[in-house]
Image (cartoon, rainbow over all chains, first blue to last red; front, side):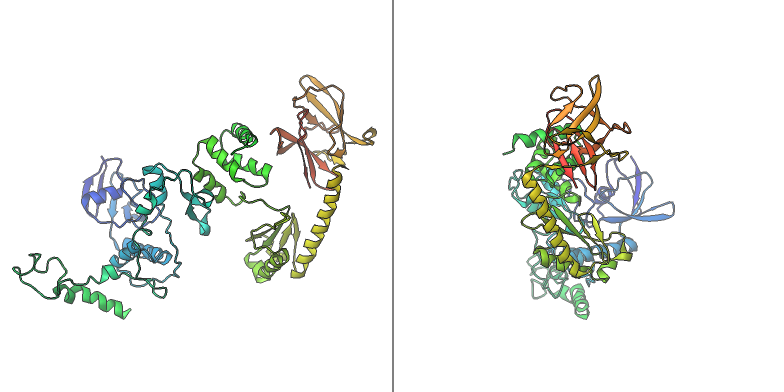
Length: 240
Length: 278
């Protein structure tokens, strides 16, 4: 079993694991869009990139497709990785601003501005639906057609396919179709309202006896939290 | 419903090309001029590939067309140099004249309007290609003229097509010697003389030079269904072309026409497959 080092933690990973598997096993968080445990890795969204250092050089690879090797040194949250991920999520949000999954990820990563022209597309071409249809539903009804700028995911000849059983698996797994962000307006590409400003549900501070959760502020929803992190985020938002 | 003809053709192509998808699609396009949907469905059925993969490959490559193409293809260069010199005005003029958008075909299947990003001839731009002829320093006014002359010429061809029969003069594709035999007449016209060999026989073979007439005379009688090798009587080179017969998928014999173009004849006795490539 190859011995690898992720963020300074040594782990003996089974041979058929990828770097993402090993990181998940250790509980390290790597954002990923087009990865699903039940499907083969696509390596399309590039959000799961990590930095790999070997013999003084460093390179950025997608962790969901990179198999573990002996002596691998992986960094999941180095400065280079974080910056690259920010640009990738910026590009993805510009491509499809109406996805809640993307907006939440962008807010989580601290993206404050989208510098690219929004495309208002309805697809990020992660290929999850194609793999879902083929591998889990054994349908093979949808696939990629055309190429480059005209790339599209559709059924052959754009008509209802005979292979489609209308199971809805493609819609279920899509990060864009299922969770819609209704917040963004055409003038404003970035939303992130859900992630950035958790509205307090309790208006007052209660002590341990009167707090109905019995935690006194630990759940993060009472008004004490408002003066902390969330307010800062709001100020930052206003400044931008 | 898939007709028997389609499935037979697809089956023969798949056997010939060992199940290679791209080669099969290329040859289907050779017969049909585009890729009809029933052919694609048949290919996916016989190759046991999902239809979305066949469709994906057919849409991925730019040389595959899913819609019928016109007889005449106008290609306008929209590369940087040609664009600066007014390539977009030229394509707009073509669109106006032909009443179609770029990438589309006219309703009578006469013209297809295409764009290209660079021909590598930026120095003489803007460039337009109509039926393989390059027009340099193109002016928008020329578009109308060219379309008119093509329409006139195609009318001419139609008249001869109505008669269906016209004499051709052919040469050997290797040595360009004329294959016409003025002393031996078939149907009152000079005959086309070649040498053929089949089984253990080797001798002369004379074809009618009238396009669309299948009268032949031969030194040795050849039974139906036997494929012969055609040789030039001057340079003795075999005159094998690249096209496949649309009827029986035998590799066709190609003869060069005097004045440009070529004629493709099926070398199987009894098969009337022939193509005119001008």
